[in-house]
Image (cartoon, rainbow, N blue to C red; front, top):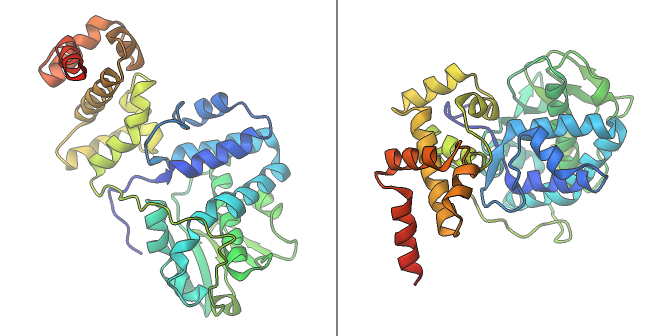
Length: 334
């Protein structure tokens, strides 16, 4: 299995919106959930295509604690079945059987969720639907595995047109209590493996693919993800520069890297976090100016102590005083 060494794990913003909407219907405070998970506070209005997958993992973990395992897993399965998986089903239509599609599952998911690492792996004559992730001994990781297992179950159920249930599951975690709550008691669970995987029987793999228009969502616009690590980091961090004093520590946390690793990866592309932050500030400042906001408002939004600090930073980055840019924009609008 090959993956890009500079890929930033992300989830489409529309999927994060679905999850937050579903959870908020059960009484959770939206702004509180967004803040605690590290998702953009303007999630429902910003135009960015992707959010960091790390923030979605936090969303899952925090919400599961508040709603309880049984209610949360039911809601998650419902969200997958009715609103998330139908968005990707159209990519399965070009394959004759489920087995054909699963042999190409990494390509399907790379279009839908860049950074995902999934394959169909054969082992001792058995076929396993595998999802790879960097292991960490934490409750958040256990829930991210549960998230993946529920997704696989719901995907296979929609493709087979039945309430399909697995008979064998492997996980990276050391415990299976949460996953036990979502699978039949007869399902065999194995711990401490190199990936989370679900056994897919041969009869499922041979099943022809037929997707009813009733469950098929309209064809989504194909979003081209950046191959450059620098461009990817810029795109992911853009919503956050308007609501935080964006430090390298916060950026590394959002991207799920150590500060040193983030610095090294940027250096390999001949740039630095300061260069990216400057570009983010310039882009966001110009966008806010075009929207007609005052310089005082903009400086506050971008995390500067006062307008003087913002003006000096803007001039250092762009070569122009922000008042000059505002004046030019004003002349254009006349």
